[in-house]
Amino acid sequence: MMPDSAPLLCRIAEQQRPSCEFFLDGRRCIALVGDTLLTAVLTQQAVLRHTEFGGGPRAGFCLMGACQDCWIWLQDGSRVRACSTLIQPGMAVSTTAPVMP
Amino acid sequence: MNTPPLVAPGAVRPVIVGAGPAGLAAAQTLLAHGLRPVLIDEALKSGGQIYRRAPDGMQRSAKALYGFDHRRAQEAHQLGDRLADQLDYRPQTLVWNAEGQTLFLQSPDGLDSLSFSHLILATGATDRILPFPGWLLPGVFTLGGAQVALKYQGCAIGREVVLAGTGPLLYLVAWQYAKAGARVAAVLDTSRRFNQMRALPGLASNPGLLAKGLWYAAWLRAHGIALHAGVRLVKAQGESRVRSLLWEARAGDPLTLRETACDAVGFAYGLRSETQLAGLLGCTFQFDARARAWLPVRDAVGRTSRADVFVAGDGAGIEGADAAGIRGEQAALAVLADAGFAPNLRTIKRCANQRQHLARARRALDHAFPLPQEWAAQAEDSLVVCRCEEITVGKIRQAVREGGVREMNRIKALTRVGMGRCQGRMCGLAAAELVAFAAGADIREVGYLRSQPPVKPLTVGLVGSAPASNQEMETADG
Image 1 (cartoon, each protein chain N blue to C red):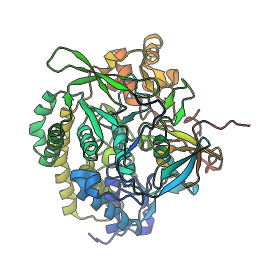
Image 2: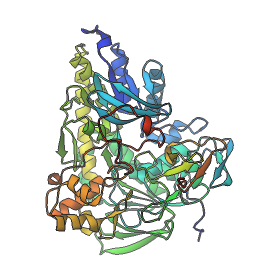
Image 3: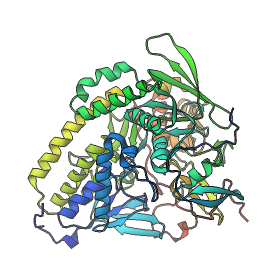
Image 4: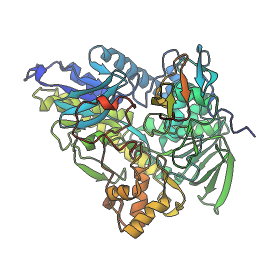
């Protein structure tokens, strides 16, 4: 059986694009130019965030900006929808909310 | 088309929200009459969800992306690109609130406001969801989401994908997945084939629609993909991700529980209209029995209860992309007529004829792919309905039973269902079904969730600089 940590999404087309580096919870990863943050993260692992209620893992749902399930955080503490934000080279994303001072 | 206007064009400031088939057609029609509308769209590129375009650098052909509809998709894209220079086109822009004749916008440049003389809302639709146990697990997506992953990103939602629910999108997405080389473990349709057979005479009024659906299903069968109709989705199983889907086969045979191994599920039960801006603008809504939902009241060409607000496309009522284009054109012609222009009568008549034709086919589709009627009765108390705040079926039933409440906005106040980030987009219709069933009431009696600004959460950090609005900013994230 595939491990829990195996990627969720599976690339089946458009794989000839140039790659770009990004940081996922501090770990250096490779995405493809044109990936959304959701694609970049979920081709690495199976979770985008944990809910603030039950704590369960979430990985997006509608992928079209309607359900708001795929919020993740950028290095500056801002929060973005992973499904509608394109990856930029060198971007650092976090699957956990920043600790407010 | 270039009828001289009876009023100075400068006095008319039309704004269109949504750059899908309806919004683009509306924009084209207004331009053809010498007006320069503002076209606002959330996406990076025009086309809407149905003709959503991949980001720059992707190379698949339109045929690979859109199947039978590739010519229409290409036409829409070319139209969008051609119009972009002539319009005041604002991509990546969210209308997060609307009051009076002012829209409140957020774009990558920040917050802004915009006034309109005439507003065409072409806000489209999202998947219609009825939750089932396990739907919160990573790997469970909407059918539309499964399609976006493939069309927009070249990804399948998993290695072994089950596509489920009902509606024409089910077979289209299954075909797109299989054709692109993804493994489709099963296609599970909750409607019975009986329903689909009964709908055939109506569908014959639009042979294209019928032929496409049958062709996709036949192709899937010919490629050894399991298609089951008349099923019930029982549970997506797994600890931290989907491992299998439990489902019941009901049609004909005695009830049998079956398990299909998979690592992803795409599901939906047709589409629901995105109506929140019409709600914020105070448009009158009425219950639509076909949609089992409340929609803005509109006349045959899209005029709402407000003289300056028009609705078009799936955001006004689900009719599909072809009808949306006509609805967009009709709404623009209505704007022109109301603003004192003299639009071409032949064009008006052609639109009306085309639309009636498509409406017949659409009614037949609704009969072929109905909502599962027993869902509200069968949902267990522990099932989470609201994925934002994890409100359960049991909590909603309790509010009805113990609180004696059956009106959706009071249910929302008591349980918080529909109060989360998605503003009820995902849970609102399911919650209404539950409340109606628990109260023993007709679904129209429970009403609908009132729109609240912001209709989608704003990016943190920009909220403080919002232009003055006399409405509270709270809600989305509490």
